[in-house]
Image (cartoon, rainbow, N blue to C red; front, side, top):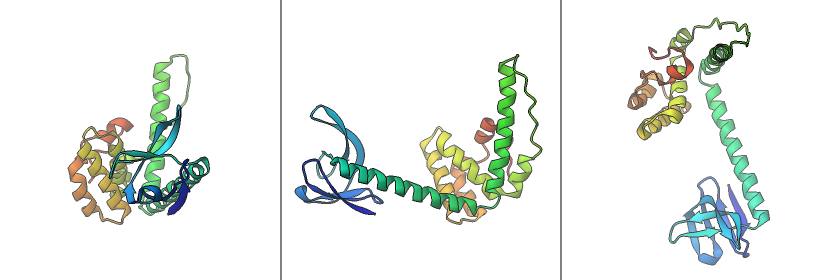
Length: 205
């Protein structure tokens, strides 16, 4: 999606939101990558588009253009989220696994609350589902959930990257065997997810 916007000085800026590039008529720059940031304009912090090539600079949009850019970016984010959800819904067993894991997590949370507060009386009902059995029944969904967690929580950058690649491969329709080959880079049996959940998902066939 490309937008025709205007700076506070009246220059025209064409912004390619999807590829995060822009061109601006006054500087005769074509398809320069940009990042969103803030800069000081006459003592006021304003949102700006930062470019680093062919030189360092900040492009500050007028209010109307800034609002238009924000609106379109939000639309793009929502489109991407909707598309990702559509692909996740197509992964067999993923929705069910998420639901059952949430039940176990909530049960564990209630137990911890009672341990922390002796005066708190709760009667949590233990979940009846067997997460290990579900993980073995839906191994691709289980692998996706582990990769999703590790992308955020892994200590090493290369593990986070490999976990992200694993997710993207599964969303793109990869088979379990192909996804496992990518997942080898972040050691899917290391128990990282299980420690957080208080569950045993390490031994997934």
